[in-house]
Length: 456
Figure 1 (tube, rainbow, N blue to C red):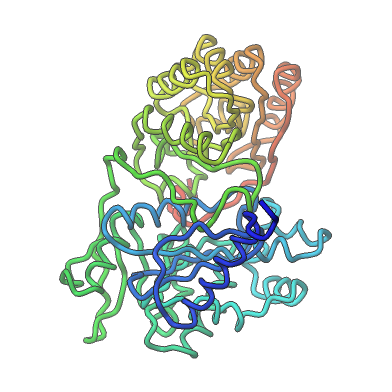
Figure 2: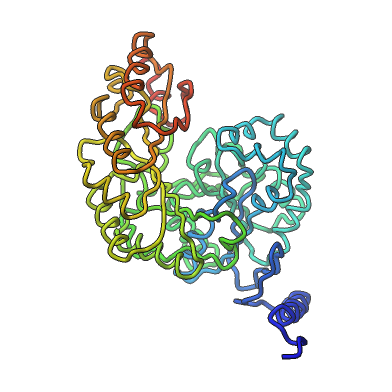
């Protein structure tokens, strides 16, 4: 080799050809072109939708709401591409502003004045962002929205609408399922609000927009017909989570983020905590086959050398049998991975299972303890008492798993004596608690039991 045809040179040549094809408007379905920090991919004419996410959101892992949805749509014969302007904005920001992405401060972006100031401070050019989406050829643009990024998203959608009124705009995600938040996306800004799960409702909507189905029969999508009447046929949650394709990381590459990948083994939750705003949105508990979860982890390790995973289930131990099967598979395969999960303290979690989880690679468990007063736990509609919570913390910690707890102060009906009781029991469990992740005042959030029954 004389140095005139190295891997780097070949990659540059490939980039030149791709740029020429882009100018010629000739679609490219797949390429192995990649340079750190560059965004050469564009969607061709055969793409059905561009999926997008705007700040703030997680920056240490590709957004599963995009990569999972993209791969599922592909399985169903629909073309999708992904645009993550959240990670690009984070990387471009001065380090002193990275705290804007802190999980505890993200909801500050939901305040209009705070959002405006942050966009100004970060030098966000919303018009340029709108152009980034319009450069893609897909006739539909779907944004993943939650409370933290809904104002930023609406700003960009308004600009897209002004520049290209023919482009159909869609929102999906948690804010789309909450009436008070989806009202931020009226007909003037948004054509379709996906209130159901993306895998079913967005898929059906895109097929209908292709002309392959009657849009009036699509469930889990809110929209206004030509007659001016709202369509919003409810949709039941997807109960069978087996057979989901692995997330598609060809565009949003793990190496552009941190060293962790987000993964889920379930959706929904079998518990009905009075303060929880997520269970009413996600619905009943449903579980993926343990082997499919294992295979996704094994493939990520094999293809991307991913060794760290974060389970983002509402409650990862809702099905201990599934959890134990996953642990057994990881142990048998000797997969060199580590992971963290969120648990509810329960009677059916044994010391042996905690030891298995540790052997499988479990590094940390985040326990939703909330209180150690039995009276308050009962008022919260918790299914465990303080004794069970303390036993779970001890078993996990003794197994060598790092233990984190969340606490809530000021739940309706809580008294000072309950606070003191929680403090005493925290002292009793001191050596079994490594971190307190969050301790916060009780808040009444949309769709919670506290909101529905304010006088309880």
